Amino acid sequence: MTLIRLRCRCGSVRGNVDFSRPSGVHVVCHCGDCQAYARQIGSPEATEIVQTTPAEVTFLGGTNHVHCLRLTRRGLTRWFTTCCKTPLANTSRHAWMPFVGVMKCVLDAEDDALLGPVVHVNGQHPIPWVTIVRSLRSLLFGVLLARHRPNAFFTNDGRLLARPEVLR
Image (tube, rainbow, N blue to C red; front, side, top):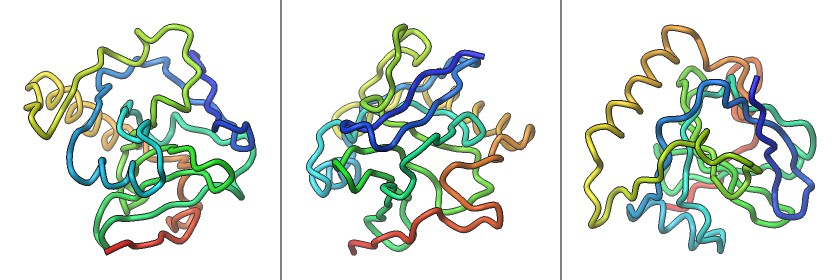
């Protein structure tokens, strides 16, 4: 097991992410939605994302400070801390989706190789095919191997840990 510590800036929210299977998807996203989210919470760090599955993320404390928002009613659920406005992750609206995009800024990685090579995507940066393939492979294996459970961002009955604020 290769655990990387997860923590917000002030240390109130703590956890781990298991990178025993190194991520092949580590992006800096330049899309309008990621940029709007970064502006909304006042953190440019909200756009560097490492893909993993929900089964790999565990909170050890501070979940009372974990909050979420959506830019639109049907958009991604974007998680951050209320204590220090640290961006945490992006997830689907659905508990069954085996996807978590963890923000690089909350990962205390001694070896960034576990996080995969950084690729700039969207905006003026086309998404490389290898990034698309790696992401789809992770989702496919996540579905087949039920890596959506346990899920630190959803309750056992599939409800979000926090009620999302919808901006538009």
